[in-house]
Length: 416
Image (cartoon, rainbow, N blue to C red):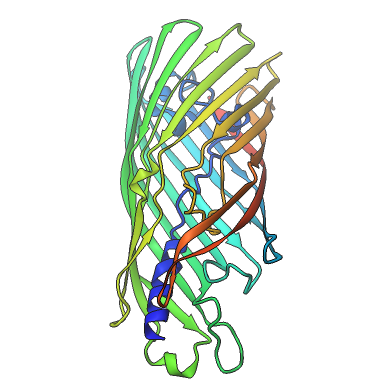
């Protein structure tokens, strides 16, 4: 039993806590409405996230953009062979805030705060996949001081360091069947706060001819290092309590580097079209190594085998007058999860996002931005084939997953 507990606790409790592949593309109301394009678009202070070089091309000296979204996610699971059914409905609240200031005609500085990674999943308690995950809440906040230099009227560079702070809380059952003397399923809760790391972003913008803007942005890999988090065991049978006291754990999670290139073209003063290509280097997440503080619980290596993934984005903006701007967009997002590694803490597959929104200019300085995103995931029949319990290796859990995400958002822009 000691071997059963140690392997199953280590194998998926912490790996689920640090669920990769849950990139949240909601970093600005204007740019989200345009299919989340922005590496070659200068609309507002949102450009600090999409391409910091664009600060130099903002017309006003002082620019502020703040906003938030309500993220409604629904996942349904079904295995027809065993007549298993389960579902999860969750709400998230990603946010962003950007401030830029033109110090001189050639130098701008700013600050960006945003939430590009996160996961909130809560399955039915003791469902058929509870040995993999019951619930998870993963958060990461990026804080990015930024500078931008205008080399000429047509070329600029920008970038800055990124400080990340995050937390995670996770619960799952220890095995597929272990209970205490009262028949309650044994489980573990893992909690880590104050998980911090550093990275950087850099980019350039080039305006070769008046209607055309070309952009490039790179965001570095950032490794989140959880140290001395809390692992709490609940409802253990009496024979296991002494062997598995509450303890600590340590683990690293790499958030992948991203490269984005794109262009925008103004067909007229009223109509703009933009295209972005994004590449996320998820291959760094090949496995999660977890160390537990208690003696006797071995180090766990949890296969994830993620692959690099691309996102293709297209957006447009139409300004009929000084009061309104209308936007629409579409993107296709490849999943980094490969067949046989499909775990229910990040039940995502290839998806298409459909976006729209508008700005109402209250005054020439203040605007209200609204956006919406409908994210449709391809239905997938997949499994996680690398669970170990006792002497059984590569135990499979799988079925059919259906996902839908809807996210309305609102924000304010102010400039002078």
